[in-house]
Length: 156
Ligand SMILES: CC(C)(COP(=O)(O)OP(=O)(O)OC[C@H]1O[C@@H](n2cnc3c(N)ncnc32)[C@H](O)[C@@H]1OP(=O)(O)O)[C@@H](O)C(=O)NCCC(=O)NCCS
Image (tube, rainbow, N blue to C red; front, side, top):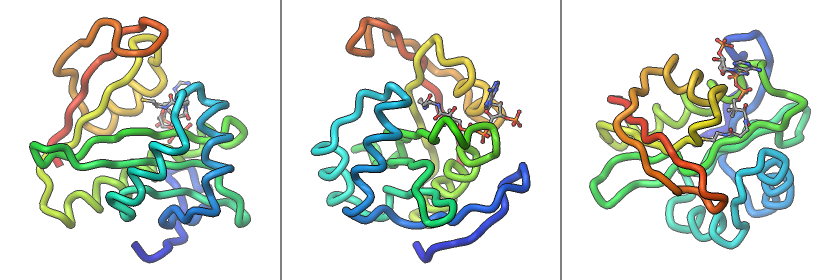
């Protein structure tokens, strides 16, 4: 994607662009702080598989959030990771990253997008529901620490 400067629904100015390798340190800082337990090598592998699916949000040339989208074998989109630096949450950045991701998937004529979210993560669940996701399943012990995941899906 071409970098886009946009105002979020909360009137917060950000720039959304594709991930580049130099961003990995910042991305992993945000990932760690958000307890996503992501892995840098895996993220880089996913980036190499589909560079367009890895997007970041910047504010004053600093990465403040990221989203990784992948394509499943069933040709659905999947939000593999999404996180915003805690200092910049609640300003519409997560919503803007998701919307940008949906538009990217639509460009590829993908009809559905799905994701997994921790049962305890009601903030993210609220965001996803407000963006049209519905609960389609439940996976016990999905996360390393034994927590279950809620599966959600949205028609694009
Ligand atoms: C989930 C996350 C990405 C949302 O990013 P964000 O930039 O803060 O989200 P937004 O500002 O776009 O808010 C979108 C919606 O999320 C919900 N939300 C965000 N912050 C909230 C808060 N503190 N309390 C309650 N709801 C909240 C609201 O529904 C909000 O919609 P509204 O502003 O219209 O009420 C961010 O909280 C985060 O990084 N969390 C840790 C990592 C994580 O949970 N990732 C998702 C894993 S599946």
